[in-house]
View 1 (cartoon, one colour):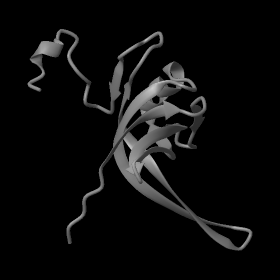
View 2: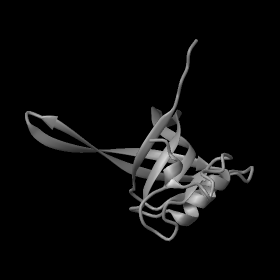
View 3: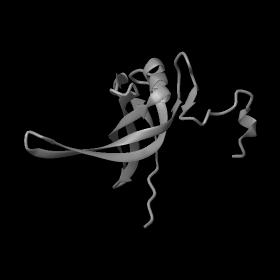
Length: 133
């Protein structure tokens, strides 16, 4: 059986991150981003907005909660997860992105800062000229 689950999104936070802690002490940070898409329909340029819920665990999530705020641009890399539950006899489900990496984009006090789960991000001495494209 073949399985592949990877997503990369770039968008803006629609609300400030919320952090909570599991009974085990592990932190869980959640926020939502808006991603704009443009397409042509009958020679007219249309734009649509999609909203995605993001969940970030541990130290990476704590960093997001500390430095991100509503309106901030981010690039999120992770996997899709579907949660299922029952509420008042009705079965419910939700698909969200579990982030493995979050890159802070645009302005702000830590402009261009990158945070990645156990991957360390780009070395401080790396230059844009080092990128082969």
